[in-house]
Each structure stands twice: as structure tokens, then as C-alpha cells.
Image (cartoon, rainbow, N blue to C red):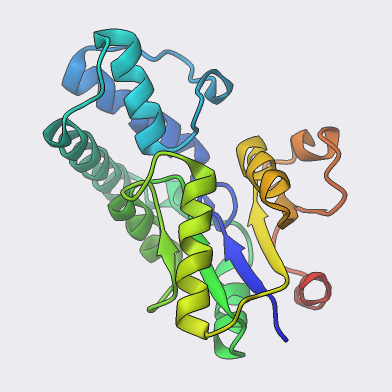
Length: 223
């Protein structure tokens, strides 16, 4: 039986960490005059777009954002991405080999899913720009929940329904400490992606870390 293979997006399939951080910060400057400075994601309880938005509102205004405010933040971030792409498309690049490897798995009927902490709309924008076509595979995101673990659970539940399998083995490709923590808590195999070569995941004890997706045969051995 083939395993379920789940991918994160930012820093995993898409080399978009820098533009994502900058535009996320600008969203709160533009809409609420809040200066997030240099974002330290470790300060947030839930490192997802909804989780961070909720915590910022709680810290700044002592309440959660309304649905309209969430929608405004999401829409503004997407507008910023569109503007940045129009100015400099090179800010939206794939992690080397990601699109080809993803397509190879898709064409060979490997059960796939996406579980990202990003908003649905911005995640789809990035995937389109880096050439990753997810078709109708299970796709869970921050529109659905603020918790990364819950987002991953939603992706797994959708995959089990779509593929008609219980999946004794699940492999998750991710780049963040929060991805690793969720996988460890859920008993999911974790393959670290260190495209930016900061050795962060290795320092946390991750045994399997790749820099990109160019070694197809080696990657296939992992799954």
C-alpha cells in the first residue's frame, strides 16, 4: 500500500518565505498601523495565518478578529502578493525540483495532500506561480482552522475519504519547527526541507533533511 504524502507550501514547495513575511507584516501596517517588526514566529502559539492574526488581535485589542477583519487581512495579503509578483516574479520561485517531483507523484497515483498554514487564496496563488498543479487533491489551509495540527488532521481525513484508504503510513514534507512539532505529536513521518540551508531542522534532531527535490530516486526511497 502506498503511503499518504502531505506537503507544506512555504519553504517546502515554494521558496517564498521572505516575500511572505514581508507582505504579512505590511498587511498589518496598512490595515491597522501595527508594526510587527522582524517577525519571530516562535512568539506565536499557532504559526498559521489565522493563528497569528488571532493572536495579534488578542495582544493588540484584547479580542479576536471579526470575520470581516479576517477577510480584509486575507484579501489585502493576496493583493500585496499580486503587486509583488507584477514587480518581481522571481520572488515566487519553487524550491528547486518541487513542481516536477510533485507532478511525478501525481501522475504515478501516489496519494497526495496539501496541508498549509497559509490562507487558501494566497496558497493557491503561490502554487500557481511556481507551477504546481494540485488538481482536486485534498487541500487543507488556514481558512479552516488556526491550529496546524488540526489543519493536518483535516487533510488526512479528506485523503482517507478521497482515496478510500486508512493509510498506515503518512509522510509529511515540511520546513518549520511547527511542522516538525505537529508531526511528532501525531506520529507522522517527517522529511525536513532546508532550502535556505540554515541547518535548523538538523539541530532539532531531524534525521532526514533535503535541500531540494532534484534527487528524484533518492526522494522516492523516502516514501
